[in-house]
Image 1: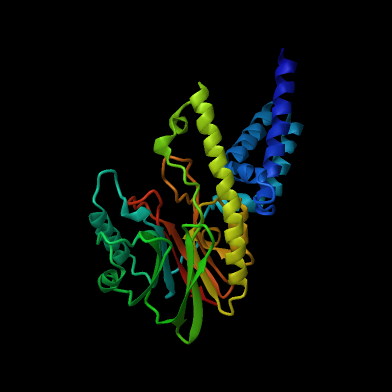
Image 2 (image 1 turned 45 degrees about the horizontal axis):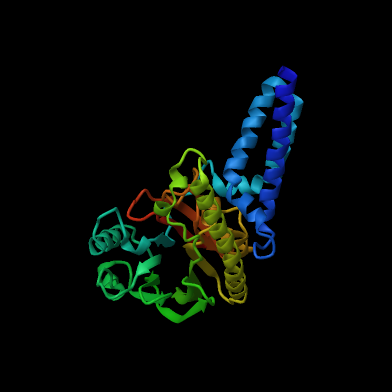
Length: 353
């Protein structure tokens, strides 16, 4: 009986190792070509933990077998760093303070007022003394919940702004202390999301700021009981699982086209770049890898802890990012525990080399 149990665990271990290796492929294979690795990439943290548990288990049972999971984990060490950092990097030197935040249309807490939520968020941003603020999922409709021009007057370190509408009701806004030289948009067909770029003058240099909001999964947790269910019990649960799987697939595939277009544009930029946004995808994904390119992730370079940014009912992941070109160094990365959205704001200080 004991031998059978160990053999079954060994087979299960091989399966978890295979799943981990497939998850690594998610950053290289475009989901609109083959979408299955993207699912494994999304599940990477859970697959990683399963392999870590096997390592701990085999230490006491058959130490040689632990090499299966240990080698697989070490092969993807770069991906572990994208999820967890032991120590941050900080400085008191002067630099460019950057904040990025998906404000969830100023939805705030359940039953709260949009205008009141917007005021609270502006108050929070005012405390950050930021030089660059990138907001996504901003309510820009006619209900007067938020007005970007008025916000500039209230934000003590901000003098200019650039907004892009992805629909009549919402879009993205970039606020900056620095003079704006040029503004532009990157739109994708059949998408309600948008990316904007803003050229600003910092000292005597032009820097291009990208504010990106990629395609979401469009999964409303309130409509799917399976999300809070401990298991799959009936046909309804199976139907909801299929619907969720279908939405995941469509979002993976749509983002693939978006990020290719955006990353091509970024690559052609002749200036140093700062990239902020809600990617709606995790650090082990094609979308993340395409936007990152040969640039740097501020969390990886200067963050600490797990750095999760999404705090809604779906599994919590780090999907909000600040990237930057090699012209800068990052310090003081922080994910703030400010809960006026289903996302948390992220910030860092960038210093020119």
